[in-house]
Amino acid sequence: MLQGVFTCVGCRRETPGGGTCERCRKLTPLEQLIAVDRYGTGVASELVRLWKYKSLRSTEPFLRSFVRRFFESHRALFPEVAMIIPVPLHLRRECERGFNQAEALSGILGTLMGAEVANVLERRRYTTPQVKIPEKKAREQNMSGVFRCRDAEAIRGKDILLVDDVVTSGATITQCARTLAESGAGCIFGFSLLRG
Image 1 (spheres, rainbow, N blue to C red):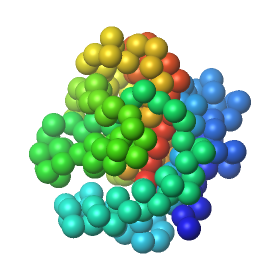
Image 2: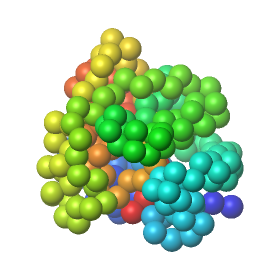
Image 3: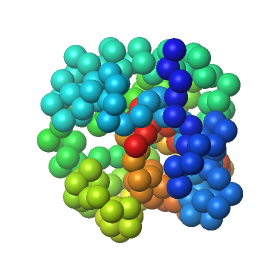
């Protein structure tokens, strides 16, 4: 059984169900971060590497199975949400990869949770990949002002699950959550395949 990684998005300390700790609540509107596995180790990490960087789409059925099994064994930890929103890629990066992996994951979760998947976030500028930036502060600066909500009315007051394939420093998912919160979203939760 997949155990999951349940750590605060800000400080990375273990917390019940991946809830954001009291200290970090001042820094992010994200209520919770659920992750299937740890980044850099294990089969899931290797599958994501092949899927994301080698565009090996044949790994998708295995990843879908990981997500389904994890969801089924941890269903009680998943919040009831009205909408699932993938972290967007810049159009240039999506063309380079051929797909948005967060969008693919959102589709899987949308089916499992019976929730609408909506691409309401937009990445306004092309940025250096976060994986190439080692310092957390520099990652936060790299993401500052990058996202915009295309349809605030669609999310107003709605509880949302924000989805990304990998969360390491938390800078990207936190900036997305801030953008959604500023646009009037209700509670915002996070999900990723891998947590660094």
